[in-house]
Structures are given as structure tokens and as C-alpha cells.
Length: 520
Image (cartoon, rainbow, N blue to C red; front, side):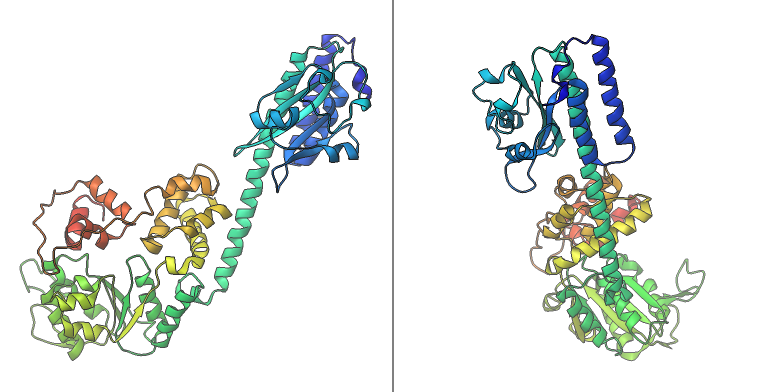
């Protein structure tokens, strides 16, 4: 029995000084560092010795299982602590844990629900003994308990004891929440560093391609196998799977790596501008042509020409390109003089080019010229094991860009790995950037992450055309507001081709409208 059982007869000033001493000692411990166990041991010690709240104990949930047990206590033997195991709703202790309400038992001898499990009645003073059970809010729908015995004859108000226990329980709850946050952040940083180390060891990093999944490595192996040839390569795969990155990797792995790499986005060039963009022009070739301009084909001489979204090429341009590829010569607009060019052609498409050939939207001879070596890129869903590495890469990239320091917990990364990602890598990058910009705290768990995934990872059903050769109805330049266009882009993970198809327009029409709104 603690010597503080007989603290009766002291004036109110004495108890106030004891309360101040208790809080001062506890806060001094907190100020020295986050040694949570040390603080909790001192709390139960001071409650017993300074305020006479005897046999103070802190009860927490078992890490595994549904029971709660005494984790810290003062004035209890080892056997008593071992017996202090409770289930929700069991006895007074279990009822306080289940209902999360303060319970005061004025006389344990008259309370049939009082179990007396930890401390047997014969080991307590013979006079009237009270019991106080104060819940501790631990956050994340968790609860703990601080409990103690109290002799009824003490010259101290019960309300004063309750007030101190409320202060202590609030402090303990905040300290434990802080401890969880620090532990989660430390674990997330460790995992982040581990992922970075693994990524640096990954052979594909020399191309800037992140991942080690079998599907990705298969595509890399195919790419490296044809890198030293000069044959045309057609990269197939859904938008957002990294076709431009693979095209650059093919260039870097080839003997042309020191020469130009020129990308042509066929979906972004207005139809009346293809001639100048691709083939260039001489001065005076047309009104406004005040100087000679080298086309992108000529700029790629001795290097690699990457035709992105090649399926968007107009039929008239397809014939001219085929002639250039077959003859190895081109003429700028405004001159009949031909120049020899030496370029490696790498094309990419998210469309079914064979179907476009069958419907007359793409020249069969150009298709076979481009499709010498087809390489299909895996979807993000086919390489889920790469998502943690990609998350780490994008976190590092966007943290640096936006001067933030956001991490994802293990549960958050697992949640991202479970998603279907219809917009693939581009969509994942968009989500990570949004998290970095809008995260309310340094470490994002799965629970907070769900808000960022709402209606983002859902694919937008595409509206098929009424036949491949059907013409789209004319849409004025003001057919859609800026907000409608941006909303459609977000729903499609930034995929402009998919967005244009869903809105019933061509990719060039979408590009023109975005340009009007100063979005691109």
C-alpha cells in the first residue's frame, strides 16, 4: 500500500502546490525529448505519491488481439499487472473503454460490475475505496484508459482529482498521437530512402525509366535488342505509358546518341501547319515567309525523329512523309532542290493503326514502313510492382519542384498500388503532384490519400464514332468552356487524345481550344 493513502487533513493550498509540482515534473520530462514510456511511468508515479490517487495505471490495447492490458502502473505488483487484462465492455474498466466516458465508482464494495481483477479487495485499505476510470483519446478511433483508486475520507475535492486526470489524459493522448506521427514519418522516410537506393541500382535508370517488373524489363530488352539497327520502330501502348521516354531510351542506346533527337507531336500541329513544321520553307515561299526555316525532318538529320501519336497525321502529309522515308531526300517549300537526310524513325501511337489502315484513315504503305519493329509498352496495371518506385521518384521530383517535403506512408503506397490507373504513369504522376501541393501534413496515410483519389482514378467511358470514316459534327471554337475542358482533362488523367475523343472533337481541335484559353 502506498504511503499516500493517508493524505487527509491538508489545506487546499497544499493540494494546489502538489498539482503544480506534478504538472511541472511531467512537462520537464516532455521537454527533454519524446521518451513516451518514461513520461507515462512518471505520470502514474506522481499521481500516487503527490495526489494520493493510488495504484494509478495506464491501460492500452494489445498490439495484436482484442484485449486491453495494464502497460504502466505504480503500486501494483508484477502479478497484479499481469492479471490486468480486459475486454471491451467487461467490468468497469471495459465499460469505460467501450463507451469512452469517465466512470466514477464511489464505493467499489457496492458496485457489482467492479471486477477487482488486478488488485484483490483484501489488498486494499479496509475503509471505503473509490475507483476512477478516465478514457484517453488516442486518435484514429483508438482509446486508452488511466485509472486509479481513491480513499473516500481524504480532505480533497473529487472534482479536483477529476480535473487533474482530465489534464493528464489529454496530455497523454497528444503525446501518443505525436509519437505515432514521428514513427510513421520515420518509417516512411526509411522506405523512401530504400526505394531510392533500389532505384539507383536499377539498370534501367540509365534511360530514366523506373521499374524492375518483368513486363517492363521485357520491353527494355526488346528495345536494347534493336537499338543498333537503323530499322523503324513503332511503340504501341495506351496514352500515358511512357512512349516518349522509351523513344528517348532507344535513341540513347543507339549509335546516334550524340546526334539530335527531334520529337514531333502529330496531335498538336494544326493541319495547315504540317507542311512548314515537317519540311520547312525557303524565304519568300509564301506570304509571311521572311526567312528560311528548317523543318523538323531536316533538324533530325543524322539523329532520331520521333513521331508521337502518328495516327493523327493527315492523309496528304502521310504520302509526302513516305516519299521522304523511302528516298532519303526532302525539299523545303519554295524550292525544287532536294537534300539528302539520314534519320532513324521511331513512331508511337495509342490507336489501332491496323484498323485505321482498314478504314482508309492511314496509308497501308506508310504503316508497313513504320511498323518494321513493333514494341508494345506495358500498362501500369501490368507492372504494379513498379508503382512504389514510381511514387518515390515522383515524390522526389515534385517535392523539389514545389519546395515541399511530403512523404507517403506504407499504407498510402499500398493503396496507390491497388488502383487500376486507366491514365497509367501520367495519371499517377498527376496524383502525386496533387498530393505534394495540397497535403495538409508531412506524412500522408491511406486514409488521407483517399480524398485525393476521389473520381481521379475512374476511367471516362469513350463515345465511339458512328463508324471509322464518319465525320464529326462541326463545333465552334467556343463549344466548350475552359472549366469543361480542364475537367475533362482531369477525368482522363491528362490524356488529350482520350479527352478529345470523349468530347467529340479531334486532338487538333482540342489543342486549338486549349491554346485559346492559354492552357498550353
